[in-house]
Each structure stands twice: as C-alpha cells, then as structure tokens.
Image (cartoon, rainbow, N blue to C red; front, side, top):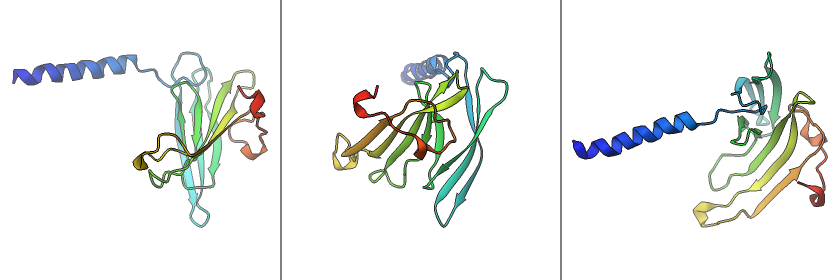
Amino acid sequence: MRRYFAPYSLLVLLLTSLSVWAVPDDLDGDGKPDRIKEVSQSNTKDTFETTKKVSIWLSSHNEPLTVMLTSSSSDLDVYASNEGELIVDRSNSSSRDGAELDYSTYLWHPDHQAFCLAATTSGIPANQLAGEVSPSHMEVEHYTGCLKLGEDESQAVPVPVSKAP
C-alpha cells in the first residue's frame, strides 16, 4: 500500500498545480478570462456546408459579440489559442493521415472593437503514420487592415510575402 502512495500523491500534486497555473482564455488582452459559446449549428447535407452561430463574451464588454460563421465542409470549430488568438478552424478531420488544414487566425483590435483577420493557414500536415517529419505543402497568408470576424474572407487581400511580419 505504501508504494502506491508516493506516485499517487505526486499525481494529485501535479494536477493541482496545473489547475492553479492554467491561464484562462484571454482574447482581449485585459488579463481576465473570456469565453466562447456555440449558440447554434446547421449543416446542409447536399453541399456539406456548415453554418455556426457563435457568441463571444469578452470581459471588457457588457454584451457578447455574436457572429455567423460558415464553412464549405462539414467541419467548423472556434477556439482560443494559447497566445490569445481566436481560431476559426475549418480543417477536414475525416482521417488522421489524410487531414487537410484550413484555419483563420483573428486578433482583437480595441480601436475597431472587433476581431480582425490576421492570418490564414492551409495545407496538408506531415503524415506521421508514414514517417513524415515536415509537411509536404503548407501556405500561410498574413493580412493587414481589419476584415472583421464573420465577414467574407474571400474579400481579404493578403500582404505580399516580402512585407509579411
């Protein structure tokens, strides 16, 4: 019985310390937690299009920001990154070895009072099951200005590579 006590107590200590030091999602940069909630979702079976209504509660605002997002595939997810970025993930996750990445990164801009498109990432990740270490094709495009979350991303003009941050 004693030999199980030490590993178990270390596990409890580790889990407790992780929950104390865990940083909540802070999307507006004020050091307070924000939250994202999916309000509704609809899928069109004949075109595989997904529409999702998402509400984002920022600690610096009294009311939630609510937007309609669409994806041409059946996959659509919205979450915060560890760096406080808002990610709209349209990646095809139908199979691990044949997945395709397609996500947009938004940053909060206080002067616009909106999440603005910062970058899009698309491509095919490395197939780790086949022993690949690096992706065969990835494309990252950066944007300036403020194309707001929920607006048509096809209207955004990427920054030329030589000027990208």
